[in-house]
Length: 104
Image 1 (cartoon, helix red, strand yellow):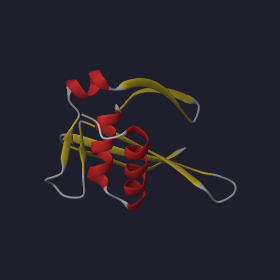
Image 2 (cartoon, helix red, strand yellow):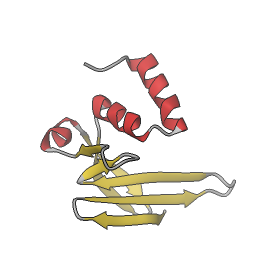
Image 3 (tube, rainbow, N blue to C red):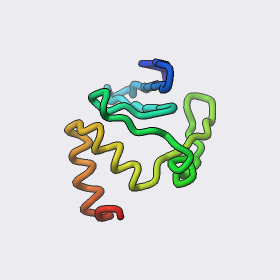
Image 4 (cartoon, one colour):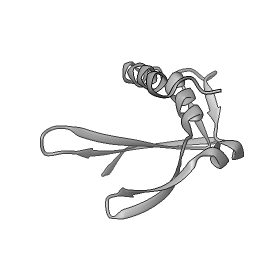
């Protein structure tokens, strides 16, 4: 994978890694640090101790490295999808709510 975007701005950071496949398909994974920004400056989701306590810690292979990171729980993941609100996120939200319901 190669880093497509890498930004560090005071209280938050963002990196997108991309892998191009032989058939023209593309895989991307986003890494966020500190806080997650939505489409406006008013849409901010802070990565707090509570977020980390409820997240799953997993290992993900990136190139020849294995990185440990936190993956949000269902409620936080749904909130992040709502903040992003891209067309693909809207489809994901509909499927998540259909399959798992609305979290408490």
